Image (cartoon, rainbow, N blue to C red):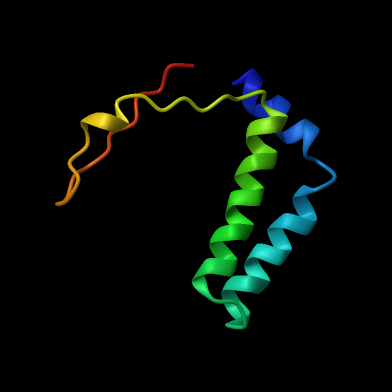
Length: 77
């Protein structure tokens, strides 16, 4: 829980801008999916950096080349 507070505290100045721009992007219809996805990646980057979170992915070589699969995250922190 402390990490979430730390994440919010470190991004307190950016939060209003990011939040209202995200709402505008969704409701205005002026932005396509790729542009919204890029903006969400920016938000996730700031959140991860603010909380000192490091994302580690393992086992990618075990995924099938073609076909469908489901990913289940495991929270370790």
